[in-house]
Image (cartoon, rainbow, N blue to C red; front, top):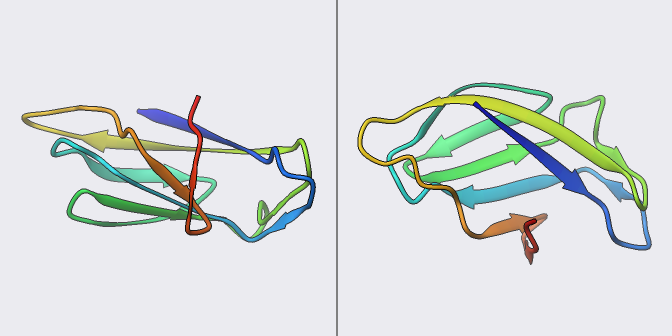
Length: 89
């Protein structure tokens, strides 16, 4: 199970968000909440739900997922927010 928090450190409000990342192992997301998730191979795309599309400056959105794996459960190392590389922490 994982929890992801997206923090808006920008000066402007975000209306609609999309977070992408790749699992380096063979992890498959089986369930998620507070987001809509699609997966193609190792690539994950998580987008806002209707109720959490707006993220004000200094605000955050949290979503989570359950996943399975058989050989490798490595963590992602790079993320993309609305198509641009973003920091993780």
